[in-house]
Image (cartoon, rainbow, N blue to C red; front, side, top):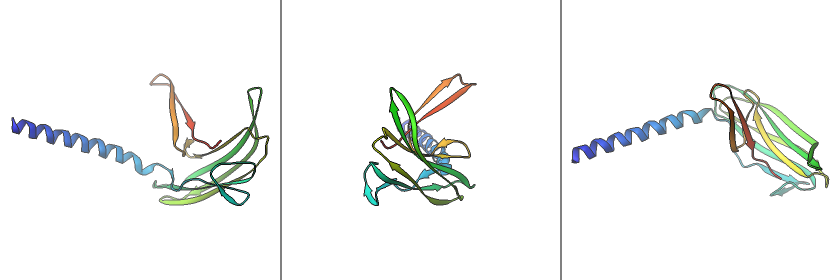
Length: 155
């Protein structure tokens, strides 16, 4: 009985080790925000975007073995009768070298007319979002699948 318990315990630990190794093997190429995104409004640190000159700053790290192009977006929208219209956009594109980090800053002049303010980044090499996804929805079949990302943003 003790030998069976020992064998079961060893097998369970080996399975956990293999699953952990498989998960860790995926992580090294994931591009990520290496510092919390900061916002300055009219030159002062702020916890959210408001009316005035807003500067969204971020540091993005590329742990992959190849350089990648990243575009950071800051966007304002007005919404009237359920129709969303972009009112301002600042996008910054940079190459982030392999194993390095790069600083990004996007500036928006936000007015009272801005109903929505969004901030997000994409890896241009594969058009995947760099910001953490709120969720991912899948449509279609296994052979013909489309992925839709819901992106975090500031409002």
